Amino acid sequence: MDTQTTTNYAILLASLIFLTILLAMFMFALFRQYRFRLKEYDWQLAREVELIDSERKRIHIDLHDEIGAGLASISVLVQQQTVHDNSIHKKVLKQVQNMRSKIREIAYNFIPPSLDTLGLKTTLVELLIEINAIHKIKVKSNLEFDDQNFIPQKAIHIYRITKEILTNTLKHASCSSINCSMQIQQKNLVLSISDNGTGFNTENKNWMSKGAGLSHIYSRVRLLRATIAVSSIYNKGTSYEIRIPLESLLNQQDNG
Image 1 (cartoon, rainbow, N blue to C red):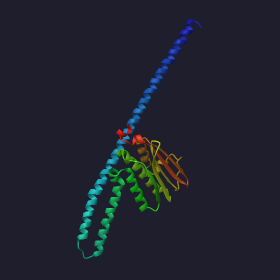
Image 2 (image 1 turned 90 degrees about the vertical axis):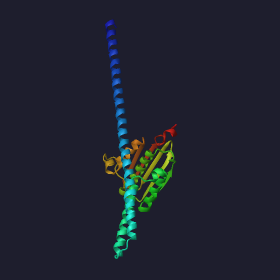
Image 3 (image 1 turned 120 degrees about the horizontal axis):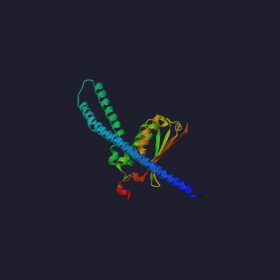
Image 4 (image 1 turned 135 degrees about the vertical axis):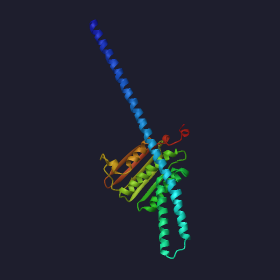
Protein backbone atom coordinates (compact mmCIF):
# COMPACT_ATOMS: atom_id res chain seq x y z
CA MET A 1 0.00 0.00 0.00
CA ASP A 2 1.57 3.28 -1.14
CA THR A 3 1.70 6.51 0.83
CA GLN A 4 -1.23 8.12 -1.04
CA THR A 5 -3.51 5.16 -0.36
CA THR A 6 -2.54 5.17 3.31
CA THR A 7 -3.28 8.89 3.48
CA ASN A 8 -6.69 8.37 1.86
CA TYR A 9 -7.56 5.62 4.31
CA ALA A 10 -6.50 7.85 7.21
CA ILE A 11 -8.63 10.73 5.91
CA LEU A 12 -11.60 8.37 5.42
CA LEU A 13 -11.17 6.93 8.91
CA ALA A 14 -10.89 10.40 10.44
CA SER A 15 -13.99 11.49 8.54
CA LEU A 16 -15.92 8.47 9.78
CA ILE A 17 -14.82 9.12 13.35
CA PHE A 18 -15.80 12.79 13.02
CA LEU A 19 -19.22 11.91 11.58
CA THR A 20 -19.73 9.33 14.33
CA ILE A 21 -18.93 11.93 16.97
CA LEU A 22 -21.31 14.42 15.32
CA LEU A 23 -24.05 11.78 15.16
CA ALA A 24 -23.47 10.86 18.81
CA MET A 25 -23.63 14.53 19.82
CA PHE A 26 -26.83 14.97 17.79
CA MET A 27 -28.44 11.89 19.36
CA PHE A 28 -27.38 13.05 22.82
CA ALA A 29 -28.92 16.48 22.19
CA LEU A 30 -32.16 14.85 21.00
CA PHE A 31 -32.20 12.61 24.07
CA ARG A 32 -31.69 15.58 26.40
CA GLN A 33 -34.46 17.50 24.63
CA TYR A 34 -36.76 14.47 24.91
CA ARG A 35 -36.04 14.13 28.62
CA PHE A 36 -36.62 17.85 29.13
CA ARG A 37 -39.98 17.71 27.34
CA LEU A 38 -40.91 14.58 29.29
CA LYS A 39 -40.16 16.32 32.59
CA GLU A 40 -42.06 19.40 31.42
CA TYR A 41 -45.05 17.22 30.52
CA ASP A 42 -44.92 15.47 33.91
CA TRP A 43 -44.76 18.84 35.67
CA GLN A 44 -47.74 20.17 33.72
CA LEU A 45 -49.68 16.97 34.36
CA ALA A 46 -48.91 17.11 38.09
CA ARG A 47 -49.94 20.77 38.21
CA GLU A 48 -53.24 20.10 36.43
CA VAL A 49 -54.10 17.17 38.69
CA GLU A 50 -53.11 19.20 41.76
CA LEU A 51 -55.43 22.02 40.67
CA ILE A 52 -58.26 19.54 40.10
CA ASP A 53 -57.79 18.04 43.56
CA SER A 54 -57.62 21.50 45.15
CA GLU A 55 -60.84 22.49 43.41
CA ARG A 56 -62.49 19.26 44.57
CA LYS A 57 -61.48 20.04 48.13
CA ARG A 58 -62.85 23.59 47.83
CA ILE A 59 -66.16 22.32 46.44
CA HIS A 60 -66.35 19.78 49.25
CA ILE A 61 -65.94 22.54 51.83
CA ASP A 62 -68.53 24.74 50.10
CA LEU A 63 -71.05 21.91 49.86
CA HIS A 64 -70.53 20.68 53.39
CA ASP A 65 -70.07 23.95 55.28
CA GLU A 66 -72.23 26.36 53.32
CA ILE A 67 -75.09 24.55 51.59
CA GLY A 68 -75.19 21.69 54.08
CA ALA A 69 -75.30 24.05 57.03
CA GLY A 70 -78.00 26.13 55.34
CA LEU A 71 -80.20 23.09 54.77
CA ALA A 72 -79.65 22.01 58.36
CA SER A 73 -80.95 25.40 59.51
CA ILE A 74 -83.99 25.10 57.24
CA SER A 75 -84.65 21.63 58.63
CA VAL A 76 -84.61 22.96 62.19
CA LEU A 77 -86.95 25.83 61.26
CA VAL A 78 -89.36 23.46 59.51
CA GLN A 79 -89.46 21.23 62.58
CA GLN A 80 -90.23 24.22 64.76
CA GLN A 81 -92.87 25.67 62.44
CA THR A 82 -96.50 24.88 63.26
CA VAL A 83 -98.68 24.31 60.19
CA HIS A 84 -102.26 23.19 59.67
CA ASP A 85 -101.47 20.72 56.87
CA ASN A 86 -99.19 18.18 58.51
CA SER A 87 -98.68 16.24 55.25
CA ILE A 88 -97.06 19.25 53.57
CA HIS A 89 -94.89 19.78 56.64
CA LYS A 90 -93.64 16.20 56.42
CA LYS A 91 -93.00 16.42 52.68
CA VAL A 92 -90.92 19.58 53.06
CA LEU A 93 -88.93 18.10 55.93
CA LYS A 94 -88.32 14.87 54.01
CA GLN A 95 -87.20 16.78 50.92
CA VAL A 96 -84.74 18.86 52.94
CA GLN A 97 -83.35 15.76 54.60
CA ASN A 98 -82.96 14.05 51.21
CA MET A 99 -81.12 17.07 49.86
CA ARG A 100 -78.79 17.11 52.86
CA SER A 101 -78.07 13.43 52.37
CA LYS A 102 -77.40 13.89 48.64
CA ILE A 103 -75.12 16.87 49.20
CA ARG A 104 -73.20 14.94 51.85
CA GLU A 105 -72.77 12.08 49.37
CA ILE A 106 -71.59 14.42 46.58
CA ALA A 107 -69.17 16.18 48.94
CA TYR A 108 -67.73 12.86 50.11
CA ASN A 109 -67.13 11.81 46.51
CA PHE A 110 -64.81 14.77 45.93
CA ILE A 111 -62.23 14.53 48.73
CA PRO A 112 -63.27 12.65 51.88
CA PRO A 113 -62.25 14.64 54.98
CA SER A 114 -60.95 11.46 56.60
CA LEU A 115 -58.16 11.34 53.99
CA ASP A 116 -56.45 14.29 55.69
CA THR A 117 -57.33 13.42 59.28
CA LEU A 118 -57.30 9.62 59.45
CA GLY A 119 -55.19 8.61 56.46
CA LEU A 120 -55.53 6.55 53.29
CA LYS A 121 -56.16 3.13 54.82
CA THR A 122 -59.03 4.25 57.06
CA THR A 123 -60.59 6.24 54.21
CA LEU A 124 -60.48 3.21 51.91
CA VAL A 125 -62.05 1.06 54.61
CA GLU A 126 -64.87 3.62 54.94
CA LEU A 127 -65.31 3.65 51.16
CA LEU A 128 -65.62 -0.15 50.98
CA ILE A 129 -68.07 -0.19 53.90
CA GLU A 130 -70.17 2.42 52.10
CA ILE A 131 -70.13 0.41 48.85
CA ASN A 132 -71.17 -2.78 50.63
CA ALA A 133 -73.98 -0.92 52.40
CA ILE A 134 -75.40 0.63 49.21
CA HIS A 135 -74.77 -1.93 46.46
CA LYS A 136 -75.83 -5.55 46.08
CA ILE A 137 -72.38 -6.28 44.68
CA LYS A 138 -70.12 -7.09 47.60
CA VAL A 139 -66.48 -6.07 47.80
CA LYS A 140 -64.05 -8.34 49.62
CA SER A 141 -61.01 -6.46 50.83
CA ASN A 142 -57.54 -7.10 52.20
CA LEU A 143 -55.69 -3.90 53.10
CA GLU A 144 -52.34 -4.54 54.74
CA PHE A 145 -50.05 -1.52 54.64
CA ASP A 146 -48.83 1.32 56.81
CA ASP A 147 -49.68 4.75 55.43
CA GLN A 148 -48.31 6.79 58.34
CA ASN A 149 -45.55 8.46 56.29
CA PHE A 150 -47.29 8.72 52.93
CA ILE A 151 -47.15 12.13 51.24
CA PRO A 152 -50.75 13.50 51.36
CA GLN A 153 -50.84 14.43 47.66
CA LYS A 154 -49.73 10.90 46.71
CA ALA A 155 -52.34 9.37 49.02
CA ILE A 156 -55.00 11.36 47.13
CA HIS A 157 -53.80 9.81 43.85
CA ILE A 158 -54.09 6.29 45.28
CA TYR A 159 -57.56 6.99 46.66
CA ARG A 160 -58.80 8.45 43.36
CA ILE A 161 -57.36 5.52 41.37
CA THR A 162 -59.04 3.00 43.67
CA LYS A 163 -62.33 4.90 43.68
CA GLU A 164 -62.32 5.30 39.89
CA ILE A 165 -61.69 1.60 39.25
CA LEU A 166 -64.35 0.54 41.75
CA THR A 167 -66.87 3.03 40.31
CA ASN A 168 -66.26 1.82 36.74
CA THR A 169 -66.55 -1.79 37.87
CA LEU A 170 -69.82 -1.19 39.70
CA LYS A 171 -71.30 0.67 36.71
CA HIS A 172 -70.09 -1.38 33.76
CA ALA A 173 -68.81 -4.83 34.78
CA SER A 174 -72.16 -6.53 35.57
CA CYS A 175 -70.37 -8.59 38.20
CA SER A 176 -71.51 -10.24 41.42
CA SER A 177 -68.31 -9.77 43.42
CA ILE A 178 -65.17 -7.62 43.56
CA ASN A 179 -61.88 -8.35 45.29
CA CYS A 180 -59.74 -5.41 46.41
CA SER A 181 -56.35 -5.75 48.06
CA MET A 182 -53.48 -3.38 48.86
CA GLN A 183 -50.24 -4.77 50.25
CA ILE A 184 -46.52 -4.09 50.48
CA GLN A 185 -44.51 -6.32 48.14
CA GLN A 186 -40.78 -5.89 47.45
CA LYS A 187 -40.60 -2.14 48.13
CA ASN A 188 -43.84 -1.54 46.23
CA LEU A 189 -47.38 -0.80 47.31
CA VAL A 190 -49.44 -3.16 45.17
CA LEU A 191 -53.11 -2.40 44.48
CA SER A 192 -55.09 -5.31 43.00
CA ILE A 193 -58.75 -5.10 42.01
CA SER A 194 -60.57 -7.90 40.18
CA ASP A 195 -64.16 -8.81 39.33
CA ASN A 196 -66.09 -11.69 37.78
CA GLY A 197 -68.01 -9.54 35.32
CA THR A 198 -68.41 -9.30 31.56
CA GLY A 199 -64.92 -8.03 30.78
CA PHE A 200 -63.90 -6.02 27.70
CA ASN A 201 -61.50 -6.18 24.77
CA THR A 202 -58.17 -4.66 25.82
CA GLU A 203 -56.78 -5.17 22.29
CA ASN A 204 -59.13 -2.49 21.00
CA LYS A 205 -57.14 0.75 20.71
CA ASN A 206 -60.11 2.73 22.03
CA TRP A 207 -60.72 0.56 25.09
CA MET A 208 -59.14 3.09 27.45
CA SER A 209 -61.44 5.92 26.33
CA LYS A 210 -64.61 3.82 26.47
CA GLY A 211 -64.32 3.11 30.17
CA ALA A 212 -65.01 6.53 31.68
CA GLY A 213 -62.17 7.66 33.91
CA LEU A 214 -59.50 5.23 32.72
CA SER A 215 -57.43 8.01 31.17
CA HIS A 216 -57.47 9.80 34.56
CA ILE A 217 -56.31 6.59 36.21
CA TYR A 218 -53.34 6.38 33.83
CA SER A 219 -52.46 10.04 34.47
CA ARG A 220 -52.31 9.45 38.23
CA VAL A 221 -50.38 6.20 37.74
CA ARG A 222 -47.79 8.17 35.77
CA LEU A 223 -47.50 10.81 38.49
CA LEU A 224 -46.87 8.06 41.06
CA ARG A 225 -44.12 6.59 38.82
CA ALA A 226 -46.10 3.37 39.02
CA THR A 227 -46.95 0.61 36.55
CA ILE A 228 -50.39 -0.70 35.69
CA ALA A 229 -51.39 -4.05 34.19
CA VAL A 230 -54.95 -4.63 33.00
CA SER A 231 -56.23 -8.01 31.89
CA SER A 232 -59.76 -8.88 30.86
CA ILE A 233 -61.45 -12.03 29.57
CA TYR A 234 -64.91 -12.00 28.03
CA ASN A 235 -67.52 -13.20 30.56
CA LYS A 236 -64.79 -14.00 33.08
CA GLY A 237 -63.96 -10.58 34.44
CA THR A 238 -61.28 -7.93 34.62
CA SER A 239 -58.28 -7.46 36.88
CA TYR A 240 -56.11 -4.41 37.59
CA GLU A 241 -52.70 -4.50 39.22
CA ILE A 242 -50.91 -1.26 40.04
CA ARG A 243 -47.41 -1.34 41.51
CA ILE A 244 -46.34 1.89 43.19
CA PRO A 245 -42.73 2.36 44.35
CA LEU A 246 -42.70 3.11 48.08
CA GLU A 247 -39.93 5.66 47.57
CA SER A 248 -42.35 7.83 45.57
CA LEU A 249 -44.93 7.71 48.39
CA LEU A 250 -42.78 8.53 51.40
CA ASN A 251 -41.59 11.89 52.68
CA GLN A 252 -38.00 12.75 51.73
CA GLN A 253 -36.74 12.25 55.26
CA ASP A 254 -38.15 8.72 55.21
CA ASN A 255 -36.36 7.78 51.98
CA GLY A 256 -32.87 8.14 53.35
